[in-house]
Length: 468
Image (cartoon, rainbow, N blue to C red; front, side, top):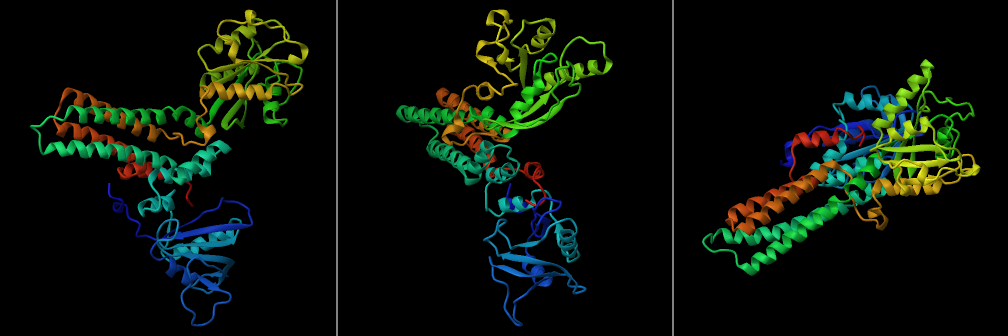
């Protein structure tokens, strides 16, 4: 799809800062009439009569006014950024007004009265992509930076914005293009078979390329959980220390702790950063047989949350023997990714591995004392190790896949290259070989946006906030 097919002839505006009370609000304007609009609504304090146009990339102090009435809307700072040296690649303006609800809204209403259109979600970043200021993978990274929930997620988003992923894709494309050039050179001489030595070199190059793509694909599961997080349910019978464990991990008193069994009857949900992975922790009601109607509903809800969770933290009282309620909890963890926590280690651990059912893997057992706050670091290490399978792709600061769209495109590219190898081995004509290579190139181009559709762009940028 040609980038010019999506119209960016309108001048658009939106508030780029979060709504609500604050010291400053930033109103962003972009489009062909940005400088003209700024001249209409902005009156610099120290501008002399007859002075020329406002200079680009210079911050001016003055007032935003309604040109139809001359009424001052607010005392502001303004900056004009002329094309192509702006975020969007077109003339753009930022107005820094006082924060709150009313002042930014008043300035926006003045802009809209002058023919400026409200920006759609992500439209500023979309224009940056359309104007060649960034590729599609980098544009997606803008949203990831805004929505990052851990330092690790932020680091990956920043690497992608800097072009680390795009550079990897460019290297894959370069290798594919080199081989495509050799294949297309044979198209003019279809009666001549590809030289066996050249054929071996081509096959080796494609195999190396497929290997490189699969190495990047192998990082996806780690990248997915770093970006999107993991829903984690804390499960156990009453009074084993689930709520105390939640408070210990959060390092604050979030859940009510009581020696009376059955205190937690609903679920409590909190987010936490565990070794760079965002976990959504859900503290559930204790699972046991009960005739109390409200507690019974809490137990039903706890089991439902456990089914929905990607990870279970199964809490057992390590100071006593297992009972029927513990066994019911453990049965609910069968077939799930789970860490088994033997709590109350301050009382002495009496539960041995032999006393635990076979679903409890010894490498997933952690001893804790929520009362003393011990075992937290070991638990975090176990969670990280289980979720990432022991992979440490991010430790060296390398780029990893975090987006499903990128994964699917790479899988299509690898499939096309594998099909190419089969055709090459069978001695098929260069025309058919070239088709598979071009399909692989198109799949790689989908990641950076060289090959895309308006529908794909709409789905990507609709997830952005309005001012970005």
